[in-house]
Image (tube, rainbow, N blue to C red; front, side, top):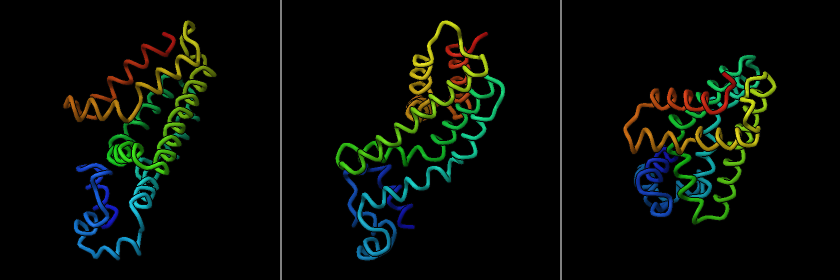
Length: 185
């Protein structure tokens, strides 16, 4: 209940504009209850981050990327992983990005998340290359940069939130675009 209230407020008002008192009010609990049960705003955000892997089924989906034996399927699975992350946890990621500018501890968590995203893109490109599916005219480094940039939760947020695309449309467009950019044809 407290975490849900924090997430709703961080998402709607922004991390910096949300006080612990606001969270307590939204959750219908005393301010002391928030501090005694979950702690400060950074602690609340850390707890929300713990939900990401579970909610987006990251370990299961990442295993599928690593184990697939078809370059197109590897790419499809990587795009689906980020789609699931954006769809189920995009609000947590947006809250983290918002908080990173005002809290050093949160900025460190945000950088760690970005590093995980980059590592996932590198793993995906290495797998595609190992299967002989990477375009001959593109380096793995360039392919990783393209994949990490386009297949990013912020891309989903822009296309679904700002431009009104569905998650299905966004996923399909990203898969088609990345297939053209990265895969040998």
